[in-house]
Length: 133
Figure 1 (cartoon, rainbow, N blue to C red):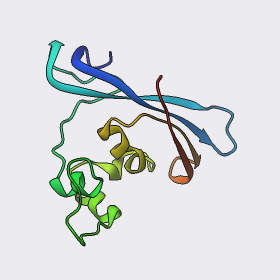
Figure 2 (cartoon, rainbow, N blue to C red):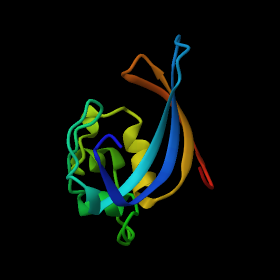
Figure 3 (tube, rainbow, N blue to C red):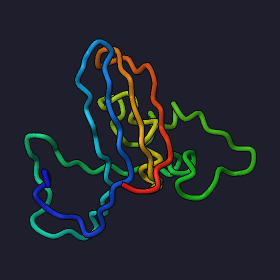
C-alpha cells in the first residue's frame, strides 16, 4: 500500500476508467474506502503517489448527499454550493470526483467511465451499480 500502513477496515467500492479524447491510453482507477480509526503499521506517510490528509466533512454535505439522515422537510440542496463548502479540496481534484465521491462514502459499489477532453474538461461520466469486484 502506498501509505505504508494498513487500515483495519478496507473495501473496494468503485472502479472508474478515465478516457481522453484523442488518446489511446485508458487509466483504470480502483476506489477504496478505508476506516483509519485503527490501523496496522506506521502512521500513513507521504509517498511518490499520495500525500495523506484528513478532512472533516460538513454536516451539510452529509445531509445533502443523504449520507447521514435526510434533508429536513422542504429543505433543498444546491449540491454545487454544498460541495464548495464541504471541507474537501474538490477544486484541486479531478472534475468527476464530486459526482462519485458521495457514493463511495455511502459504501455504494459502482463501475464507471469518465470521458475527458484534455485534463480539465469533463465530457461525460457514466456510473452503473456494481455488485462486487
